[in-house]
Amino acid sequence: MNYHRRTPVVMVFLCGLLFQSCEEDFSPKAPFEQKLVVFSLLTAAQDTQYVLISRTYDVEGFDPFRNRLSPDVSDAEVKVIRDDGMTIFFQDTTIQLDSNERYGEEGVAYYAAGFRILPRRLYRLEVQSPAYGRVTASFGTPDAVRIGHSIDHETDDLLVTAISRGAKGFLIRLFVVYKLTSDKIAVEKALEVPISITNDGERIFPQVDRLNARRFRRDLIAAVLGDALRSASSGTVEDIGRRVVVWALDPNAYNYYQIVRGFNDPFSVRVDEPDYTNIEGGLGVFGGLLVDSLFVRTQ
Image 1 (cartoon, helix red, strand yellow):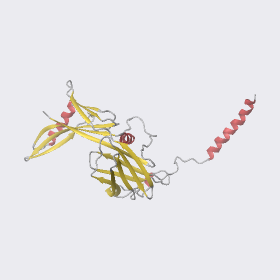
Image 2: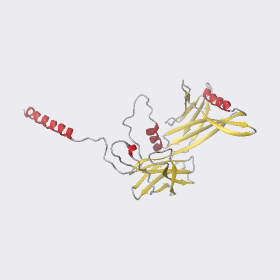
Image 3: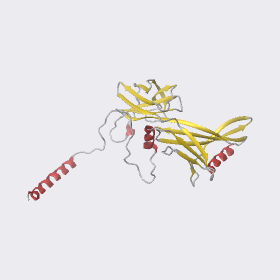
Image 4: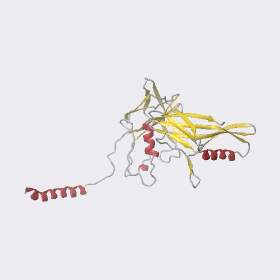
């Protein structure tokens, strides 16, 4: 019996909370928190590695382009430690920016020369900034990439497979390799083979995905070889072979790629995609990419 008498009181209480909350100011901006932002994808394709370090910043309003002060951090001590104890120290350097009107033409980066990552190893990044604190991150490289190839005897398409335990994503590319001889000078060149051509003539090339196999159509390989023949205004073109290049991405590199480049739905707008980070105490990504290649000579 008392239930019905209490209901109006409850409704009045809830309505009071509703109108009280409507009177409070609402802002979609979260409270600003100063953090280090680190970006580094180590690779086995080159012996110089880079680490980019910046900081978060706040602006009045909601337009980040109002900030004109470079967020680069130049006072950091940066090192990468391999699981066997080997420590690589990074040095700061100046890099050229691509027509950056906000921050000028130069930026700050950290580099280490003579250093390539190896398969099946653990790497730990440590960044210490007197002004902005300390962050760490780690990742494990996948197994060495094993490449296989075969010919589909029904279509004459080239089938390429890649195996690398621990890799989350792959980029499988195929190149037509040819020799251009002109005035008795021979130069080796290569053109990439697309995986399709649209009705408008646009060539679509492989992107990073979870698939560890790729089919390259015979007619598209022939089209690329035709491009090579037509590009030789003078001289001769000799078809040498095919080069397969495979990139294997660790989970951190793949997850970051998917956030930045992997939105595959063309019929909707991404409005709530979260950032990806594996930086402890900060933001950003620290990961790795292995690469291997296979050359198949034309018979």
